[in-house]
Image (cartoon, rainbow, N blue to C red; front, side):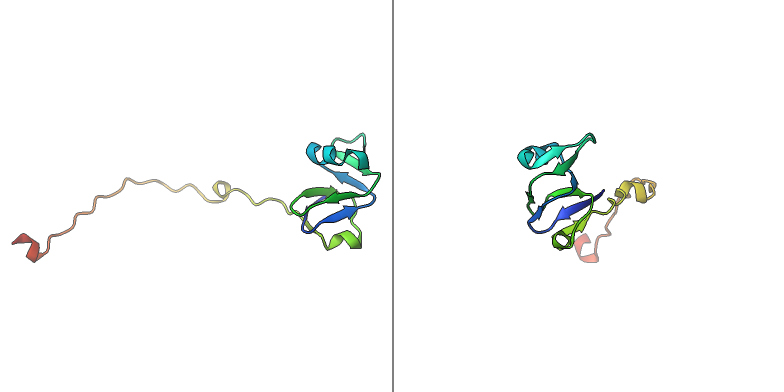
Length: 102
């Protein structure tokens, strides 16, 4: 199953969805729990609002416009940038101008 961001409100009328416990609890009357952890069978149409993330077995053309596939998250910056040697700060001494000496 692929994971999608919901861009605009959308209904799913059938199929299998991967949901969080919170998402499934809110839609309990429209879903049937399967033997797989976090996977639910749609029994009655279920509604999702923009901003939610849903795992979908197969999307139809009606729902495709409302979804954007979640890509693998980028590596954290610490993992991609090599460690730089830290140096002690150097004190900067300003020279006095000729006028300031008088």
